[in-house]
Image (cartoon, rainbow, N blue to C red; front, side, top):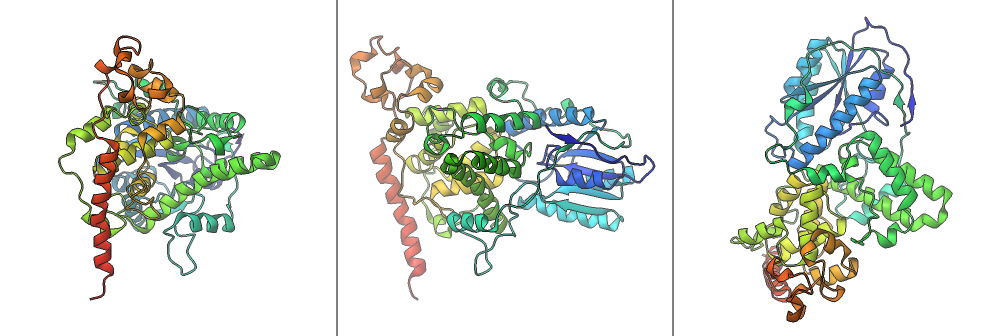
Length: 499
């Protein structure tokens, strides 16, 4: 990680406080850079806000990642002569109290955009101002803050394509900055111990797959970006939907936790294109992914109820299957009888991560084949994804459900068999995550129920004794979903009818 040294500070100068949130990095950290530039002693803190009344407290997989990322950040800070303080509790009490304890003249943080967090930050600013402490917020988590891009009429964008066009026309601004070589001296004060927060699962310890798949931390994020650009960027546009090919960037948890900035990823993509013009389409698709993340935050900022309410109000009439609890549980456990869906859900449970195409297939199956409310799936992804992001999660689930902004039409119902055959043609993805089907030939790996009965006599590994039949028939489920959607269409027609 590149580093440069700050100017020396006077130990007796009044200190400043840097509050880390979803920006667990030393490079490209405007709040940290501004604090160091002040020439004052710098104190660093992370506050675990799980005691708050936020309806979206961290899920289990996210807590596991946070532990690892904080451990890596604290180690990096220690190496620079600093110390990361840990405090737990509502931030609107913890931050003003710590500022008073330190005698801090200012508090720096990088802005966040979730509704609850923004409300907390506003109240903290008021409290700090009343105490004579400056609160200075900075842009770090997005390429474009939600209020930067507007439609020609001055409103918020509701469709991705014109949003992305406006973003590219405006251009990405900002300069990359290195991590400091050292940190100014800070005052000693009490800190929690990370292990005492018990962010890691213990009884039972279900995180074995996460430990195998991931190493949180800023240095690892930089290594991952470098490896992706070197090995997988070429051909990304053509291959990114292939579930049997490990060519995705896997940067989503790094971006969510702020271990790497979206600006650094964008600039790296630009540099790759500058040296290799033949990568134009690959870079375009990669940067489109970054802009979808931006669009999701744009939507959440404009519509704070996005995680709880249908963006399209007509979907309030959708007749979800109220008695589908058993089917939803089969979906969570990867026991639907559709191999590509089950592979996705088992990867999710093991690694806290799912290939994006697999996420869409699994989400579509829950909403459209089982008629389970999208909010049920959103809650499961929130608890099990290491990259669980409120804006991305809500926007993407509503996109799949057809209830969101610029959503996929509800009648576009993924066929899990043809999706598997297209994006996992030899069944490598399924064979990895649904090993009881590993012996099936390619012709039946995505539709095992069609395999000849004689294959069950040992030639296919005896999978029928271990793998369930489909919990719904695709054709029947599709027809049922379209009938349910007719209710929404009638609701829209009634709303548009003249009085």
